Image (cartoon, rainbow, N blue to C red; front, side):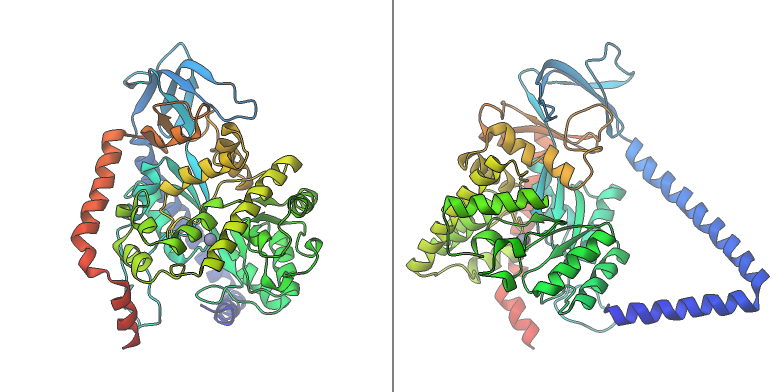
Length: 500
Ligand SMILES: [Zn+2]
């Protein structure tokens, strides 16, 4: 839908309402009353349905478990009992357990809050071109298969940075309870070239923000192709609409002073690469300048170290794609694309050396931002070529630690801080009484070794306990489906079919 259609549609509706209102004032009032009644009733009905789904959960008590709450002081609570009731954390170390509670033995285990990947592009069904009215999507997929890799890796919240209506549909499926998946926050791209809102002047930029808001996206993602004035207008309008802005630094700023693109309310940079591509100067001093400006403007950073490391690996060899952790759980269409149409593969030695230089600079950026006290949140670009949903977040945590974060800081970037940026830290991000029960149970302490985040023995997803066996079954279901359907999803064939 383009902005004009919406405006015209709205005007027509408004005019109709005014005409009806004037001609049949009394009748109109009755209609309004009726409408309010019907919609209130529907709301009540929906609420009941949702409540039914959410309160069907049992009560759980995990005993003798070590809790890493990831609160600011993060005092580990050893040998604790934690009770989960419905979808919330009901108590920690209470003397009284509720009736009919299912006990989980947590001896020797460690609990952390459910992990948050702050930069994903989740595969959703869609059609690359307009087909005849009433025709469904060209490529369709099971939402559960797309979400299972997140859940099996303890990722219980994701930030979708190229949100489409299909992602809203996926979220609805999860909320209704038909699919076990993460919470999803949605950012609408403005300034992209394909299937996104485009804007080439400030007025279009502002309209695009308002349209995104009307379409119920919660965040704006500013993108590469915006010009300077439009970028600033988008950020300003988003602030007026009370929407936070994440994004790329537009190419228009390349070579310009960094204070031009660090502006208040540009709240979160989507990857360190956004900074490294602005300059030829890849020194620590330059990284410190970026960090100082970020601090002054309240701009946080998703280092997204995974992204460039992955690009370099794909450039070097496709074997690196085949051997990715979790590759067999990637949708077969994407397996085919990553292997047969990999745009990074075959890069020159010179380009590969340049990628290496960027990786080194990204590490300096993490060090400089840490030194300046700028909050960083973990994100991986999960879903794009060579980056496997769910699995990639553990890789990012490891890279963050290698770049100089402590294990505790890396964990905070994927829990408390991420929830804080999304402004849902009153609901998730730490293990505290009253918060949603999004919890990962680990076999070993991740504060000792960040690799221990991979040793998952179970996950609470919105109060639903999914133990290791169930997680393994869910993963093997995806693998079986992928193997059985591989033949039907060939990337090159799909592209060819579009030409006909
Ligand atoms: Zn991205």
